[in-house]
Image 1 (spheres, rainbow, N blue to C red):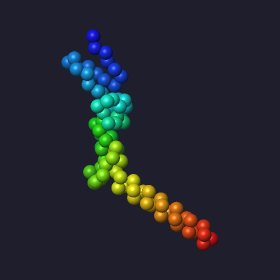
Image 2 (tube, rainbow, N blue to C red; image 1 turned 135 degrees about the horizontal axis):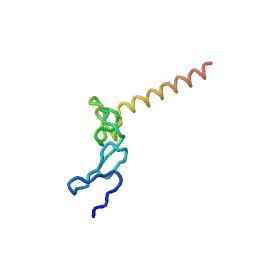
Image 3 (cartoon, helix red, strand yellow; image 1 turned 90 degrees about the vertical axis):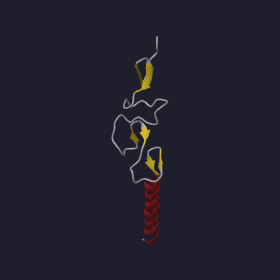
Image 4 (cartoon, one colour; image 1 turned 120 degrees about the vertical axis):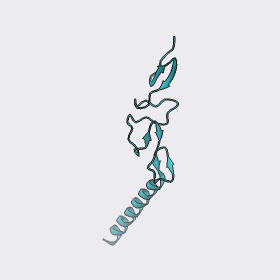
Length: 85
């Protein structure tokens, strides 16, 4: 008798992971429970938008770096304003 583990199903006596059940199994990188393209996880694999050149675990590093640089600039401006005023 086969044991069925959480996140898996048996089909023709073979155990398969269930993509889309929000349970990450050994053969899935991610499982967000939907099939939305560009949300970081698509068909249980990490994914980014097509324009992303450096996708790491569903995050586009270029976008993340730009956001971080923006916050650094915004913080610098806030510090300058506090010195001036």
